[in-house]
Length: 172
Image 1 (cartoon, rainbow, N blue to C red):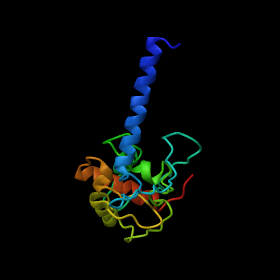
Image 2: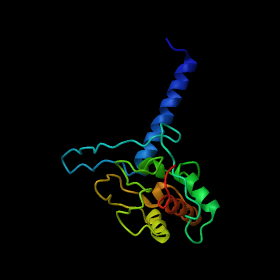
Image 3: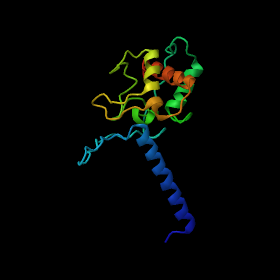
Image 4: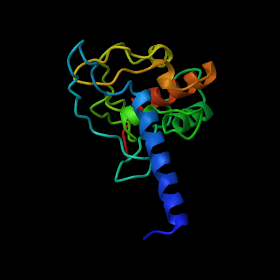
């Protein structure tokens, strides 16, 4: 039989875990398809993103000189923190993966290839700002405007600078 203290800790942990799952689902638009009227939805299987520091994910490191014109190293560093959920409620890694190599929900950002748009700094800022309401197959997750976070215009520029830089550098 467990003690009252261990029961409270277990219940608190479960509440926290449920909250994290709920936030991830909202940030990625739920990851599944909506049920047709009178029918049931078939959830699309997805590969969950690992938590920061989990597993053997190698985080992309921007190469020197890969920041876009007008962006500073401080902006790229801030964008890294936002992308990985350490600042401003950023949830980018939830769908794109902690190593930005993509998941079943969203494409990789480190390949240098773009499914839509040209991958320019302006394009990335626009994509972060407006999101991607309809996922591009084979990816299943829509991207909410600002990735579902409350990002300022400067934070959007920082995330875009980070994504721009990792899309043009090699992973270590």
